Every structure is written in structure tokens, then in C-alpha cells.
Image (cartoon, rainbow, N blue to C red; front, side, top):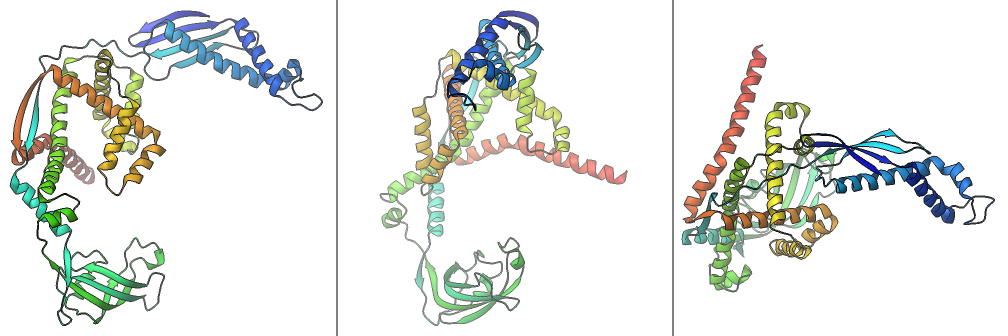
Length: 453
């Protein structure tokens, strides 16, 4: 096999590769020998079909199969020998091929740039430790209490008011006709939430236990049976029970009902949950500060094919006109993502950072514990989607790299309360909101101009 560098321009290298016809013939003979054991043809005993007969019947497909294998093996060998770090899939341009001929082809390779890592000691970033005020925890406790109302029966002659829980059986008819699902037993609704059908609750205000009330309602537009969508329907409701909400006493008993050991433990769990929500947003801000400095201090030539691939992924679900409208911004964002990915990966490799399968499993278990009642769904998702596990591995790898960077830069640690945190998060998100509003205004103005013209 002969390998020559045909041309080298920027990050693109073209190799000329010649594979001797004798090597190809040897591989064809080897494949014929393998097939002789497998092929069964009429008139020949199993395993005794002559290679010449096999070749006469399957010669073209055998040659194609061998050439494909030779191209894979020799292109990989050429890349290894020339010590090229490839970006994406190389392109093959066949110059000469055919049985009895040398295989001559060109391999067009887009290479990854050489990355010179810049010193990190001058980088600065803010890191925030959130302090959750007692008032915030008290408000959350009240919210949890409201979401987990307890109810007690009203007296038989007491009328239902907004906030009460009504239990009823119903018999419905759309345009005077019964339909599948037109009868219901033991239905419970909380008046005022309007969760059954729009306007249904309000008509039950004032009923008492034992009453029968006819309620007019319209079936939803997305009803499973299209012929019933938006149908005016009468529901004859027989009220079997009316209950009023009673205020929960927020104590150890209530805390145990919520799955905590006692009230003190519930307060700690709430504090951790709120703190985690703020920390995720604040950590994203710290990470953005770091990434902005990395991007600014590293100047790289980027492979065109990687930019094209990234843009394709980013805009896959966009309409052609939207792709064209935001072409410049999409290209800029794609370049930024690729540059950061390459620099972070170089940092990870230089510092021998790795993510083990065990770490991925541990993270999946952490997610499972954080979603009580949905454990099987989370586990099934990762088991049925290998790409999701790979994506998770990538996120953990990036997290390790960011944590490494934090040990090498100047970190300004700040303890803040929720009010300060809200302000920081709001200011961080403001540019994105402003950009979206500007794009919306620009589009609106363009539409007005088009209408005038």
C-alpha cells in the first residue's frame, strides 16, 4: 500500500492511496474460500462448490464486498500512519478500480485543529451560595398545605360554595342522545378549579347533598371521538356528598403525611429543594462566565464540515425561510459551540479526565430518586435509548472539566439571599428576552412594510 499527501490546505488534507492488485486478489481468494463452505448450489455437494463456479455467479458482489472492506481498512491505516485527527467522516474519491487492477483512490480529510491551551490563572468567575430565608420556607409550607387539602363533610342542608369538594354521579346526553362515556359514578371535583369541563363547577355552587342538578356544558374540541367535539351536552348530576376544606395544621403529623420524619425534617427538605433550584440557575451563570472567557482567549480554525453538521442539527426543525433569516446567527452560534467543545475536550484529555459507566449509572439512580412514582419510566427511557445514556455521559464529562477549571481560576464566592439571586438571574436572562423582543419587533415592522408595498 502506497500513501502520499496529495495536498494540504488549512485543515483539509487529501491523501492519495494505492493498493496493489495482488493484495485485492488475495482477499478475493480468501472470501471465495469462506463462501465455498457456506454456498449450496444445485448439482454440488455442500462445501464442494468450486471457487470458479461461485465466482461466475457472485463475482461482482464479491468484488464489491472486498473493495468496501479494503477501503475501510486502508483508509483507517492511512489516517493512523499520518497521525491525523479527523473531524467527521472522510470522503473517498475512486480514481481506478476493477478486477485485475490496482485500487487507486483519494481520501479527503477534514482535520481537527491543533489546540494551544491558554493559561487559566487569569480567569475570574463568581460562584454563589444561596441562603434560603425562613419566610420563603414558610410560604412553601403553606403552598404544600393548600395543595394537599383535607376535607370534612358538610351538614346535609349546607349548600356548596367555591372551594368545596363535590361527589356526584352523572348521566349525560349530547343533542339528546347518549354516547360512550356518558355516565359517571363517584366523580369528585373541587369547585372553582374548573378542571372537569369549562363552566361546569360554577353551576354546582349552591347544591346540597341529595340534590339533582342539570348542568349545561360543551364537550372539549379535542374529544377522542371527533363527532362529539364541541357538542352541547346536558349532564344530570346527582349529588352524593358535599365536603368543605379544613385548614391543615402544619405540624409533625402533617410532615409525616408528606413523607418526612417530622416538621423540622420537612423544612430541611424544602430548603434543599428550593436551594437546588436556585443553584442550578446560578451555576449556569458561573459556567457561562467561564465559557465566555475560554472562547475569547482561544482562536481556532474550524473544519467546515463540522460547522455544517452543527448548523444542520441546530436548524433541523426550522422552516427553510427561518433558516435563511437567521443564517448568520446560526453560523456564529455553531462556531461558538464547536470551538468550546474542542477546547473543553482538549482540557479533558490533557488532564486525563474520564467518565466511567458506574458514574453514569449513579447519575441515573440519582434522577430516579428525584422523580418518585416515575422510577420505572426513567429507567425504561435510558434502557431503550442508548443515545440518552451517551448524552448523559457527555454532560458529566463537561461538568468534570468545568469543575477542574474552577480549581485553576480565581473564584469570587458570594453568599446571597433569594432576592439577590432573583435579580442576578433576571439580569442574566434579560439579554435573551431583549433579543427575542427585538427580533419580534423587527419581524413585525418588516410585515408592515410589506403590506404597505
